[in-house]
Amino acid sequence: MSISGDDLLTMLSALANPHRLRIMATLKAEGRSYVSQLARQVGISRPLLHLHLQKLEEAGLVTSQMELSPDGKALNFFAVADFAVELTPDLLVQAAATLSAKSES
Image (cartoon, rainbow, N blue to C red; front, side, top):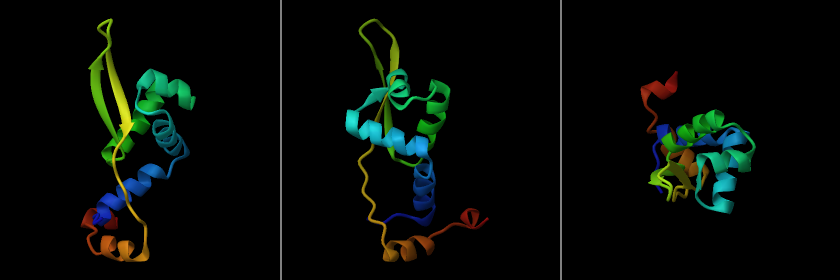
């Protein structure tokens, strides 16, 4: 898999947080979930969960889909995105060669 240096940094940064790692593990183990349910499963508030989910979604690690429940409530379901990155020294060399100027600061 080819990944740009900027994308790799975004992905690693998103995963470098214990809450986000727990969110990813819970979504993988339990399957897709809506925000209120996921907040209870992970043990954090919904506003905090939203912030972490936003970071994970920006990194391409989770996907979201808005659906209507039978009673008409809008529920935002999140699931682990399909991704695979094998972190090797060669990947780091390739990714470093593609870093943008904004990544340098």
